[in-house]
Image 1 (cartoon, rainbow, N blue to C red):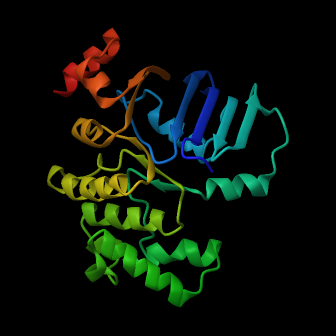
Image 2 (cartoon, rainbow, N blue to C red):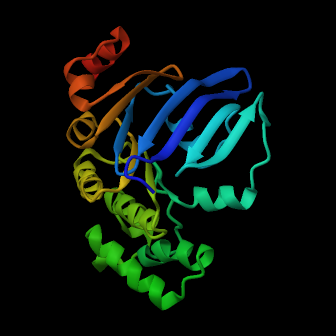
Length: 256
């Protein structure tokens, strides 16, 4: 696959919930190795967009490609062409997802949470899964917490376990849905530090975030959404240093 290949490509995507038009003719792409941060006010459609990428929600119309493969093509809330369901499942497994609320299994230890998907989905044997799981927990600074259950971990520690869990499937792309918004302020930094290490390692990442400092420092490109539409996109220097739209200027003024 060439270096400039599209890992994510979205064309003319609309999403309705009943009469509510949540995503409006969305077009954007993420290139291999790129970190794209999506910013905007609450209710602008950012999280819905992420959920449409990995089929947690179905789009109403438009096309979605993952790693060059079409995984969704719909018109008027109906499938416009037959797409191999097993292929869609395979492609969506290439997307690791880190949620706002951690979503760890409470009855599984930190290591158990990290090893579960490889063992069930990829049929990795337990010894191999645990060896890799320990390497991933070490990479997020939590190898000493391998046997702890989520209830005994801080929010920041739970989110770092969630990142290790997402990485356990060797994803080609990591999606982050406001990964620090449920954390106490003093715990935000430890999660952002892990995300920065991933970004600088070359991982393709799409991050919905309210952390403007992270977007400014780490993103290759920033996308500003409002009311279901992409209003503006560009480099961090362009978005934060020279915003063009009135709506983006208003939004940035409120985040200072």
